[in-house]
Structure formats: structure tokens, C-alpha cells
Image (cartoon, rainbow, N blue to C red; front, top):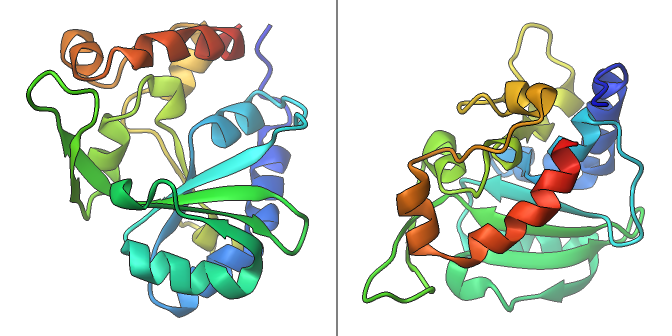
Length: 196
């Protein structure tokens, strides 16, 4: 059964784990949001697994992401650079992180690989995610700054309610989402386990 009793504490712990990144991005004038499974699992009060990783999205471009991550990480990887993603392992805590520039995608010629365009909208970025329960975003900068009255959890597609109701829905029309990238259907199994 889904329990949200400890969600507040878990979300704060997620932000604390992200503090070196959130401070660096804030000082450089960028936004930084934890997204996807780490936010979903924090809301569900799921224990951290051995392969724990935090995914982020930001308005920073890939060159800025790499510049800001380099002094904070013991290792960096750039396999996703063409898609705006830089990964690394934080020196403080050893947590694996991946940070991706806000983006929109256009799929052409029946290719699974999208033509990527950088974006400036958190909502547009979240709309391209596989399921609403993975389209939740936590503003780790605002949460770490502990500013009262500032929204820190963003849920444009009712993913929080879908977690409560144990429902898997897509943020946009499923025919469009799955025809763009059929592998998203395979991720349904992992997401379905999370929604139970």
C-alpha cells in the first residue's frame, strides 16, 4: 500500500543529498530540479537501492553543466552529451547523478533517436517523460535555501494522485508517446512496480 507519511522528510533528504550541486547551480544563476525515480521513490518512502541515482533537469546548457559538475564529482561521463546529459559521481556521498538540459524532442523517420532541441520550460521537459509518476520535479535549490512559501514540488500532470491511486498514465497522448519511442513501454514494468 502506498504511504506518503514520510514524504516530507524523504524529499528534504533528497535535497540535502543534492546540496553541493544545488549551491553550485544557484550561484551560477541556474535552476536545478530532481526528477523521475528519485522523486517518485522519496514520495513512496522507498529505501535507497544499491544502484541509487538522482536524475536532474536544468536550464543550464551542457557546457555549463560539465563546468559546474567537474569540481564536485570524482568521475564524469558524457555518453549522453548529444542529448544534453552529463553524468557523474558526487565526491560528497558518492551518489551517482545525471543532469540534463531542459529539452523537447522531435522524432522523425521512424527513428527511436530524437532530434533534440534545448528548452527553457520545466513543464515542456516533464511532458516528454514516460509516465506521470516519473514527471514529478523537486526544486532542490529552493528546498535547500529553505525559503518559506516557495513551491518546491512540481506536478503538472497529476503524478502525485496517480501514485496514490496506483495508476500508470502518460503525461501526453500515449499513442504519440509510445510511437515516438516504443522502449518507453518496457519501462512500464519498473514504473508499475513503483506504483504498487
